[in-house]
Image (cartoon, rainbow, N blue to C red; front, side, top):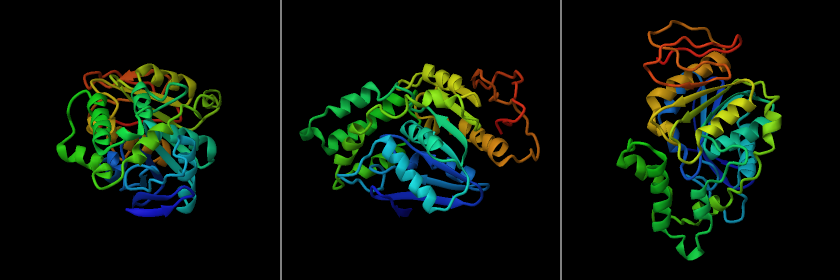
Amino acid sequence: MNRFEASGGDIAYHDEGSGPAVVLLHGFPLSSYLWRGLRPALASRHRVIAPDLLGLGVSDKPAGAPLGIRAQAAYMSELLTHLGLDRVALVGHSTGGGVAQLLVERRDDVETLILIDTIAFDRWPTEAIGEIQVLPAERETHESADLVVRSALRLGTVEDQLTDDDVQAYLAPWTPPAPVDGLFRFARALDGIGLKQLERSMANWALPTLILWGEDDPFHTVDVAERLNAAIPSSALGLVPGCGHFLPDEAPETIFPIIAEYLRANYLRLPHGHRPPGPVLVPLEDHRLGMDEEDDAEPVVAEDQEVGPNA
């Protein structure tokens, strides 16, 4: 992985492919490993940047640096400026989605936004995060860190799609002898501040925005997705049935083609080379859509946006 010295510490990031940049932002308590399948899927058309948020993954875990989403947005902005990007699409999951929302407000070069089961408004942190935040210092152990990660994955997925290797990859940053205090410091930094005031400004956002959500997300329920969809006039909402919070792990074969096609049509603005068979799954109007493959109804597509078939 590449390294960049941000104001808060050293940030590790993947950098692959070429073309207009797409930045992939993961959430707590995971890492950029979340995007292991999406990175190569996008790299043929895009420069794909996938950092580990400061305090997570293999990025630095500084004791004195702020780790909340407002600070993370500042660090990510520093990284994007360092890379010399003149336009960018953001894909944010969970906490990373909150960082992405702040970057839309912070920068004028964000052209497309994709939010996946994101934190939003005043509907965070979750009760589960609250339980981690009050853990006494003597219980900030490797065993507790292991439990935090495993519990998030277990509770946040409807079925057990993750392999043992996947789980171990998410646990690797907190495996002895690595210190674990950074994980709990990050949890305590999730203070619920910074996103509520965006709801009013979202009414003026014009960038194409795709919202993808697991219908059975136990942490951020579907009503949050619907509220986001209502707040952002240029947004489309797709609900994925039978999935929970971790869509990139639970339904990569469903959402990765949709993300790639959405970026092709609304960020790259490339025409279709051909139209493979199959239903078009995500309509780009202010309507909720369940992504059942049995549903062949023709969607209504806004004049300036489109998304192609689930190829």
